[in-house]
Length: 141
Image 1: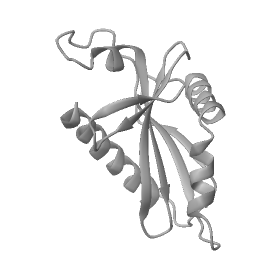
Image 2 (image 1 turned 180 degrees about the vertical axis):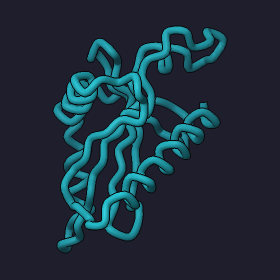
Image 3 (image 1 turned 90 degrees about the horizontal axis):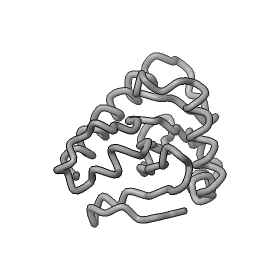
Image 4 (image 1 turned 120 degrees about the vertical axis):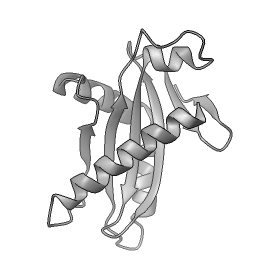
């Protein structure tokens, strides 16, 4: 699981850097994107809105990081959609088969301040937070 998460994080980090380099002005407003080309705009809005509505800590973390007039750009990105064909031998099968993986990053103009990964069930029933240090998924909702 850790290995797969690191691959997702590396891919997303590259996408965020490329996206950031493509704009000349730093914009402190939030961004909602997807690196998974199978995710439609409607699904992107539905999943990220549900996540923000049910995990208020995401927005409060942005406010905490922005204390002292620091401009923080928060980006939500769906990095993977449910893969029902994922190998069933994987102990994390259900998380790959039934959940959208959403990467949330908080960055200033110069650096990445913090990031988190959340899993949102495709039927909007559950939300998990990825605890990478403990290599576990913690149920949020």
